[in-house]
Amino acid sequence: MTAVTWWGHSTVWLADSGTSLLTDPVLTGRVAHLRRMAGPQPALPGVPDAVLLSHLHADHFHVASLRKLGGTPKLIVPRGAGGFVVKALGFEAAARTVELAPGEETTVGSVRVRAVKAAHDGGRGPWSRERALAIGFVVEGESRTWFAGDTGLFDEMNDLAPLDLALVPVGGWGPTLGSLHHLDATAGAEALRRVKASWAVPVHYGTFWPVGMGRVRSHMFRDPGEEFARVALRTAPDSHVRVLAQGETLTIGRPA
Image 1 (cartoon, rainbow, N blue to C red):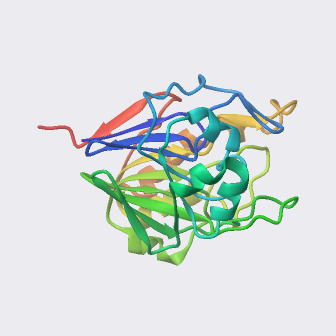
Image 2: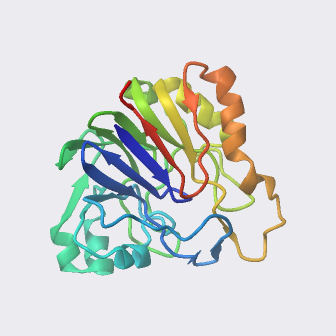
């Protein structure tokens, strides 16, 4: 069985074949000018075997959350991010860091983690010289799970098919969303059609929003998950979409 618990934004606890992975953890109530507007503070069941970090943006590679996590999980990061790990988390963390470029893979416990392409800017931000690739991950254990990170559509998505589970970003953290390097609900449904996943969970929406802007285009905060499910009914009718609340779990592959 494979179980996935969504803790808001792109933070997902994935348990497969006795191995636990945590994606892009944001475990605090605030990230810079963004405030957690929905869902509880993440209550993780423990320290994961590995943390998958898709790119350097602060709402995905959140240094305070990685420090708060504790323990000594393996850190799987994009190629080029190792130097930032040293600066942000120290040499001990760097010693348990694995850098991957698309097509490269590593093993964590009973699962294989392969880096795949993401169409997204990989820099830390306009104020920083830190740069690395932006990537997604395919985790292969009892199930084949795609964690897209942040991405726009790209042709090679078709090469990921077929999948058992897709964790699809369908929104953002503010009242604007650039279509080039992000997916909205409609583009997310097209991504689901391309990767041919049996199950999909929408992520990267409905959790963080800029302070003082709670009423500005609030539909972009509230609606992307359900809209993704509606559009997927016609775009990817062979896929099952489960819209999770923060802290809710989907389990697939249950015994008959």
